[in-house]
Amino acid sequence: MNNQTVQDTVQKNKAVKKYLNFINGEWVESESGRYTRNTNPVNGEVLGEVVASTKADVDKAVQAAKEAQKKWRNVPAPERADFLYKVAYLLKERKEELAQTLTLEMGKVISEARGEVQEAIDMAFYMAGEGRRMFGDTVPSELRNKFAMSVRVPVGIAGLITPWNFPIAIASWKSLPALVTGNAVVWKPASETPFLAGEFVKIYEEAGLPKGLVNLVYGSGGEVGNAIVEHPEIDIVSFTGSNEVGKQINGRAGELLKRTSLEMGGKNAVTVLEDADIDLAVDGIIWSAFGTSGQRCTACSRIIVHEAVKEELEQKLLKRMETLKVGDGLDESVDVGPVINRSSLERIHSYVKIGKDEGAKLLKGGEILTDNGLDKGNFYAPTLFTDVKSDMRIAQEEIFGPVASIIPVQSLEEAIEVNNSVEFGLSSSIFTGDVNRAFQAMRDLDTGIVYINAGTTGAEIHLPFGGTKGTGNGHRDSGVASLDVYTEWKSVYVDYSGKIQRAQIDNY
Ligand code: NAP
Image 1 (cartoon, rainbow, N blue to C red):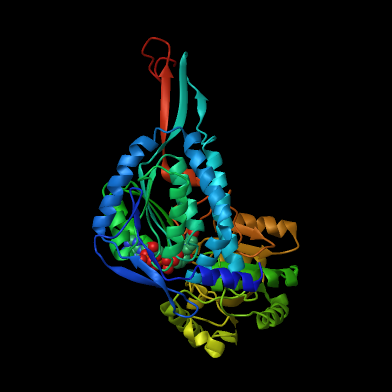
Image 2 (tube, rainbow, N blue to C red):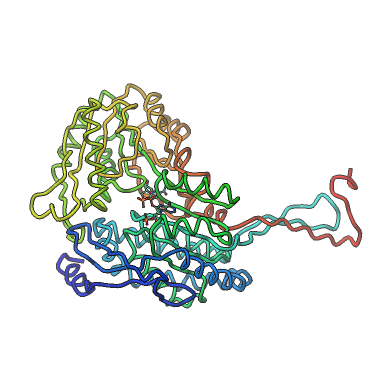
């Protein structure tokens, strides 16, 4: 689509909007009567308002979910999946419109926004397919005339709490597996990206999903998110976001003996060995470090490079960074959009100061951009540090902005050690021309996702997504693994011998 066409349709859809909660199949005001404003990170323009809900709204949503789930759990899974196919086709039909809404409220460049909506489409088709799979086990019984099997059953009500950086992809990774396995959903989206949440729920509504199965409650994390965690009738809380909030949720949910699935931060690294294709590595690093303005959980914020090729890599990265255009993501020629809000901008800038104070060498960037109208929005210059030591704060803590640090090493073994030296374990990548070293890295890099000769980002929905160590609590989004989050295993034994047979006793 050319630039002018994008701008025209955006203008057409740009009237200030108002979004309400969706509870029990109705678009409703909040009990609070209060609203918050949604703004464009490019220029601070008010895009619309959103209800600011309270615990009372969550209570209503849970009651609706409870009633709906009683029936839904007994709807045959292939029939449940038929709704998901409808969702998939509607997402496909609206792809461009959704992508523009995404860019408008969140800022990522339009090509990436289209990619994100595509991820939700892929997930909808994939999870619809699960309606006819959802495999359990049948195993031979140790006793005669007895049958043994395991089946998945829904957990009940899933409370979903999602972040702003992938507002539709992550919502699809959670809501679609929850629904196809027979659960009902109460969803609190991030306060920064309410519109896309509303548009996604409209698609569920239009697909004819029975009322009460998907409930959307807008509001702050402290109020609505917390009410979801505390609610005794919400059986599972699936959360993606920061470690700070994730730990808090897990602590409270633990006391309540509530299941949680947590996907949290990352401090992902690209390793470049001396036998790597350096131009390819540069492409991978630029895409992973500065795409989505460095605000992907899988963003590359560390570049671990063999000393023999450090200088070449630095020069080539600097050359490519010169060509990056920063601006409004709706402009097809822009490479890097704004960051989400003012406080993010300031946090990123404070990390750059920390890096300088720690003795890292700033090669490029390191400033808030203000020229050519960028001062109206939240724009940070793509930034590169070098001669960074692995124990510096900029090499250990998640910055969540377009800032990458080069860490020189002398061997593959050292690179792996540096890669694994952080509290997170989401994604890692290695560039090498040696298949033996690639396999050694695949085995030893301690992250949930490993890429060989590609950047740290680019997950596909039919494999599990998530991380080790401080990134998560062992669960995974997307892929078949996501079914484990929303189901319990039930083991069923059918004895057709006509007598009581005692396992472990009668046959030995
Ligand atoms: P965040 O501040 O932790 O917020 C995430 C969600 O939690 C939002 O909906 C937020 O609501 C809500 N929340 C805030 N405080 C809460 C509380 N006390 N109780 C319950 N819910 C609460 O994270 P973010 O800034 O949106 O997202 C960035 C983080 O997400 C980064 O750390 C990134 O690495 C991580 N992330 C991880 C993955 C992954 O799969 N591992 C994927 C994407 C992002 P409000 O918006 O109203 O504050």
